[in-house]
Length: 254
View 1 (cartoon, rainbow, N blue to C red):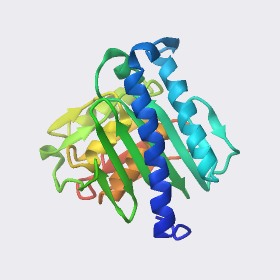
View 2: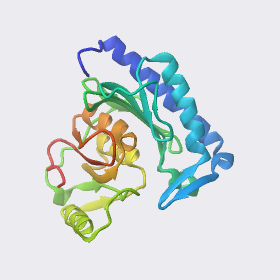
View 3: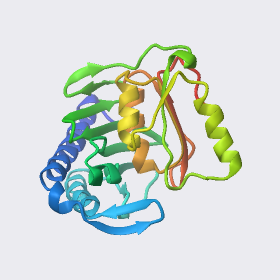
């Protein structure tokens, strides 16, 4: 965590993020039958009522308790725009999974500082798994400590990845992705970047790599990976990103 936050302030901010994610996750779970209505379909992107309802709950709680701007999927910037320190929020990562009853979806909240995710929560509410963590203070799953794996060789490891709606689909991009995944023993695509990164933090996978994700998709998970002893890198903050996260010992996927 940056020096500007004391341990007590860090814990308070993490508790705030956990409370906001837990509240939204519970509502998403309880109201899924009525919130699973499609508001818009833009290519492979799907917008559903649940996204906006959960986001409103999260923004209200965060904005009332912490003096930081918020970048969220549905609203964009709230309470100003400041890339120094801000919240990154995805109220429902894995909207199609949520619609289809596939359990890999999550609420993701991260605090960003100087271009890095320094604390995060990924609440996989349908699976009742809540991943939390802060850089320098460790990561947890439902309160129990988690650590990244120690796999060194991609040929013996598991890569989590995905195909975001914004990913380039030209021949060069397809070839690059095929080259990337063929290095690994197994490859998993579960439809939720936040969940996939949380699984790297918990040692269920050894690395994550994706082209075309947005910051709110991956910030919470990147914080968890770093807090759990791994490494995470983002190519930027606004716009489609190149994202890579590993256990810190396996080679970063190209």
